[in-house]
Image (cartoon, rainbow, N blue to C red; front, side, top):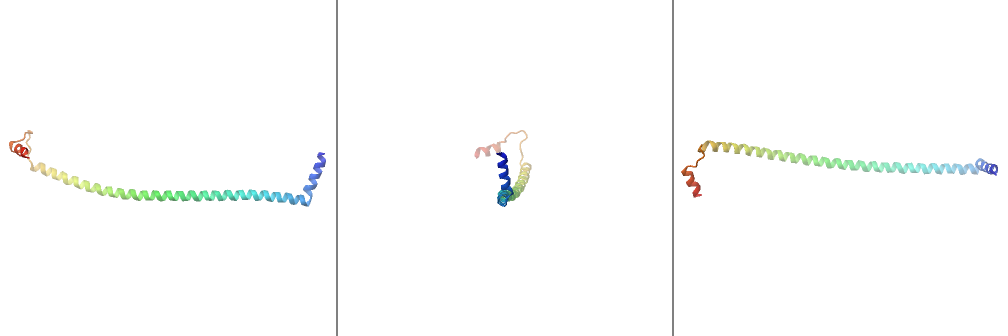
Length: 120
């Protein structure tokens, strides 16, 4: 019985119709495989494009942050220069006040100053 089935199978495989069926099956298999590869390549291309777009957007955000940080840094430097100028002016004013004002070395308030303080 097995030999009969083998004989029939061989006759189908060796006939033109059998070869045409086998060729069609091979072509169909190749088509399915090729379609899967095309879909996979398209998916990978879309993912790559999406990742590129995301990285470009992130880069642009970092650039905007850098510009904002530079502007803030410049503003702080200007404020620092103004504060340092005011500090120098105040130090000079304090030094001049110390030179012009006589302070009792014993830390005792004289009667004239005491009267002025009580008057206020």
